[in-house]
Length: 259
Image (cartoon, rainbow, N blue to C red):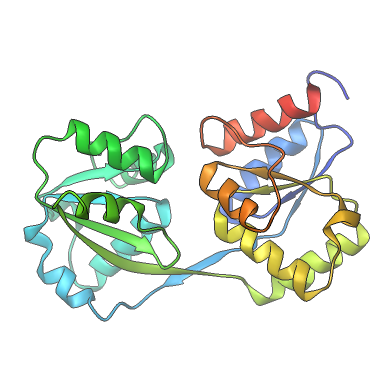
C-alpha cells in the first residue's frame, strides 16, 4: 500500500448500481483497490391510488421537498403522464442533499433550500428555523423512506402530504451473484449507501447461510441512518463519514485503512 494507492490489496463490494456505483468502483480502482459491483437495490414506479388527488392539489402546495434523486425521477415521470411540466409548478423547491439538488438543476429547476447536513432530521430542523412561511408541503418519496420529515412538520401544525412515487426492491438475480462472489472471493469491505442495501445484503447472508464471523467483512456506511440499520442487526459499521456523501465515505475508508 502507498499513500497514493491506499486501497491496494483490498477487495471492496459496491452494492450500489447505475452510474453512481460505477463511479464509486472506478474511484476504488484508481486508489488501488479491486471493486466488485453487485447492485442490491433497484427501483420501479409505484402507482399510488392517490396520485390523481395529489395532481389535482398541486396548486395548493407552497413547497415541494425531495429526499433523493429517485424521488425527483419518478415524480417527473408521474407529472409527464398527466401532461404537466415541473417548470409550470408555482412552488418552492427543497432538496435534502447536494446530489439531489444537482439532479434537479439538470432539469433547469432552481432549488430554494438545501440543509447544511444531509439528513432528514437536519433538513427538517433547519428548514423550520429558516423558512418563515410554510403552509403545505408535498413530499414525493419511496416506499421505504422514513417519515422523519413529515412527522416533524405535522407535530408543528404544518400540512404534509407524502406521495409514494417509487418502490425499492432486491433484484432476484443479484442474490445468486452475491452468494457466488462471497463463496469465491475474500471481500474485505462492503459499502452501503442506504438502509435497504444493507437489509438486502443481510437477506442474502441469511438465505444462503453465510457466517458473518467467517466472512470477516467490514461495513462501510454512508451515514447515521444506514449506521442505525446495521446496528439493528447487532452489528456495527467500521467506517462512517461525518458528511454523508459517497466521496466522503470513500475518503473515510482510506483514512481508516491508513491510520
